[in-house]
Length: 287
View 1: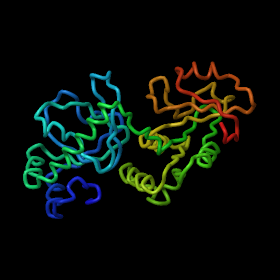
View 2: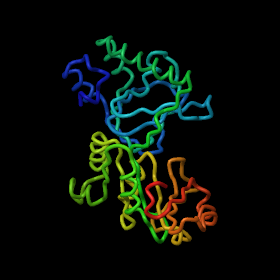
View 3: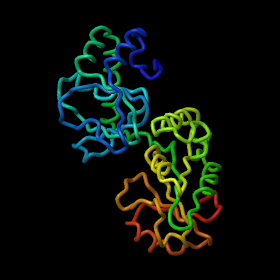
View 4: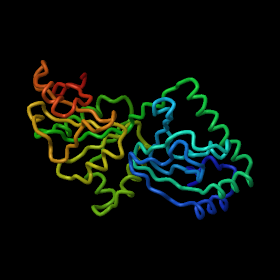
């Protein structure tokens, strides 16, 4: 826990225990809004697991930053006394500790050095915004899931892992079940995946077409989801395949072609609402 609360590195273990007592642990599902721009300051959040996205209305709600494990959210309003300056949304299922405004003010009053660290964090984020620095691409966790009636995700996941530059862990439902047991809840599974992510450059989550719960968890815990199927089988939707026309930019359709010249792409893409898509030759790492 002390590793997560690095912001308060100068406080005592007793102070940290007090924060955990007065704080409230909250789960924020992917896509849910944690903080809305313009709302009054009421709390500070510490990210235990997951990733959050920061966007501002003045830039057409464009993402300007991402906040990950160990960082503090909502601290700017404490310094300025102004309403929330940005909207914070969960990019993945996330776990946070919520500390009320009065309790957080007590922390920084008792430990001025913590306030200095908060201020440095604000300055860093403002500097990124002023110079229009884009947030990190955030593609370290990739879900490879089935698409259509002839899915090709298992072989593709292995080929993708071979092509990635860095340490890679492929995780299947069976891997999670062996580590945690068949009855593990979603929170325990999410924490298991976060631990793997900490030890690897990339994590490839492989969905199973017959397990909708695992598929959904893979999609909620990834930075990008690749829906993979043979072109010949993409005339129909798979059992758990979502409507990609309503998905965000992190979802991609991968069309596996069995010949060198792609075929059927137009009808496949149009039937799925024109998602971002890629034609890949079967077994081709170069593609």
